[in-house]
Image (spheres, rainbow over the protein chains, first blue to last red):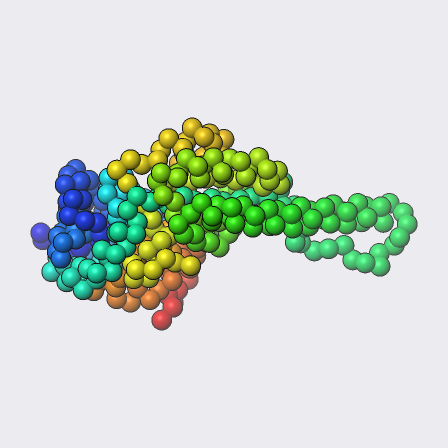
Length: 263
Length: 81
């Protein structure tokens, strides 16, 4: 290669995964290949240092189009392999200077990574989000001032507006309580759970406030039960709109060093 | 994992989201995954990628709202550390 390249790591799996990389295309349009060491196989790809080196990454990660392209490419590789074998996904933008340094990481982390693979085998991640079923129409916004005139059309409007806001506040409190009940039920069906901060309505493009953004690690043989539970909870909690995503590779359950469940 | 539980889709057609939304993906690939420091990305390992991506998202949303592309402003000093 005329341009200097480095090594992007997608995930770590067992050696059986090395047969699954044929034809896989990853970030930057490069081929995905297996890199085996210590009885483990990392899914890696060579990427141009000019785009994926440290300095370039710092800039590119703030470019939403680049970020989306790269995140989707990273995910597609991991998802493809995760359909066949347990994988420990790497955080986006884990880059090594060479196969040698990447292999050294595998050797150093082999015990932790193997333990994580064992824990994730036969399990998948599911995402559940809950929104307020009605638009959250300014319930948190400025309140009408107390002490306004108590008669006349202005006062009637203010009373009406106050009642409206109170109703929205009540609906929101109900929804938050329902979301907690939903989480407790789903947690019971899961090996592990992780709560993410709610996504902002503006960014995620939904209209009601998000009151739950959770990930659950569910045994594959309980996935149908889990999906049915979400459906049942959606019917029981009319104030909430529930969405289910998955199965995901277990991004949310590999902790900082691949050994612990993120709490 | 040899049999992915795709059959669940039939249980909740109204609830299941078919397309992977970018926000859900970013939650996972930026805040999830194993953080192992690559020797090329030493300093990035300490950076909160979620904050970085939120900034990118907010910039893009506000650019949409205002109808202007201000994504290049504040080009300096946006990274902590």
